[in-house]
Image 1 (tube, rainbow, N blue to C red):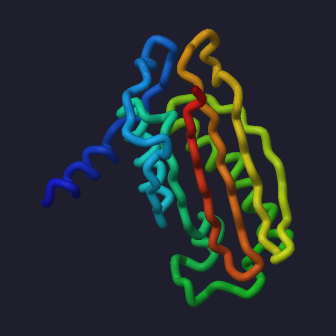
Image 2 (cartoon, rainbow, N blue to C red; image 1 turned 120 degrees about the vertical axis):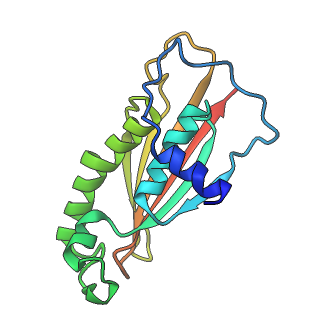
Image 3 (tube, rainbow, N blue to C red; image 1 turned 90 degrees about the vertical axis):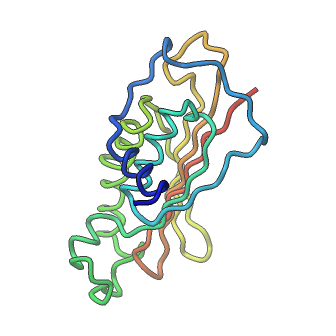
Length: 177
């Protein structure tokens, strides 16, 4: 097993940490103002990445994108993309309702669990002229760490299209100086 694979296996076995005021260290020195961009097509690997960034004290400096079929779609098609129906997109009220439930009850909760911080996301909805639906979740609060000089904002965009059931999750955590 290569070094990269063994490192990924070790990260999957990490327990999520619960970040407290005492566990937050001084912001590390960074070479860039832009966080490194990571792209995933698997929800589990996305969660593992978030967990690893918390362990590395980089929970306030990340940009990750996840392109995936949500679990309710994967369950319905039995992991066979050939079984995708033309109604499995944001034109379907059932799809939007199930996606909303998945995001609010599972995805955002998992993000909080993996990062170890209880974000209080506020949602804005946007429907674009091309039919895409975007939910913007944002937390600009102090995340429960009053008086801490290390501040950051978190944005999670969830996007679905009228063409297919693929959901795009774009998460950015950016330090505020």
